[in-house]
Length: 193
Image (cartoon, rainbow, N blue to C red; front, side):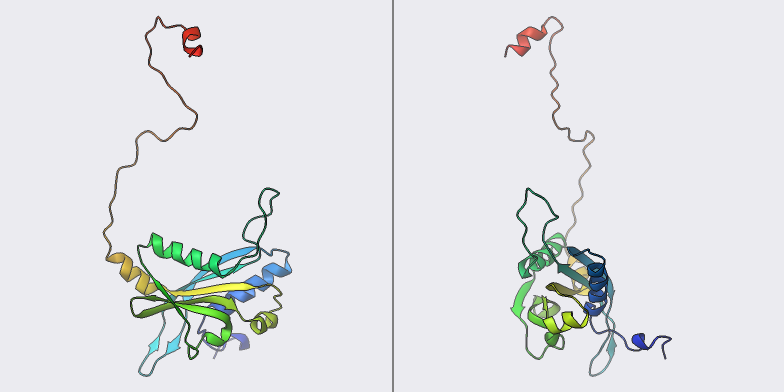
């Protein structure tokens, strides 16, 4: 019984809220986007309702900011995969990638997709959003999307050993040279070296 007819159901994926944000940004001439979102999705299993927290990544447009020094290229699947792998690396988790099963409930959303697993546990899906879905949002460029279940990552991260070390008392300096010399050494003798 929601106050808004568009909000009368609970989301099963974060993709649609991100696509709304991307469509808004594209309409305001912001075409190179690299976004993330935390939130809950809702699923009904055979015996219970689940509300997992997920982390979603959205990538579209060019990989690099506009510059005369760098040759531009469009964001692709491997840019998204690299971003997800960096997250896993920072969390100390080794994930495996497998082709998505055609019976997966989110499969129709993607033109091409793969799943992310920790051991035998499915934790996410990555891929390119289907053109028909993009057209329904008025988006005319490719969008790459990943949705990762957050709880298994936290559990895996909690099991790793964390090592702390003291911060250096003297911060690193660039282009600094100090010499300890006797007082009778003259500058000309050093400059000659």
